[in-house]
Length: 118
Image (cartoon, rainbow, N blue to C red):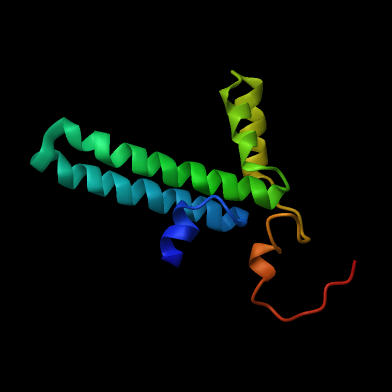
């Protein structure tokens, strides 16, 4: 259950490196699933595979925005042509905040034991 909550849920934070690896994994897995289902179900298989892939990508982007200190609803800014898309790409690729915020502690520092001096 935690696998689905982590990869398909909208809560928590996602560090920049893990975000790009997760996007790559999503794209590869769902491309393979689509390629395997195409001979069996034809073009209708895209109707099953694409919404699940889109949900996983949107969830990862929302978690990434949480790491930047923004709500996941800021993904709607991407619907604004030009400037909105550029802003969203900037936020998804920029370094996250180094301290805890409303969505949790820093994702890469959760399991480490060291002193942070501000």
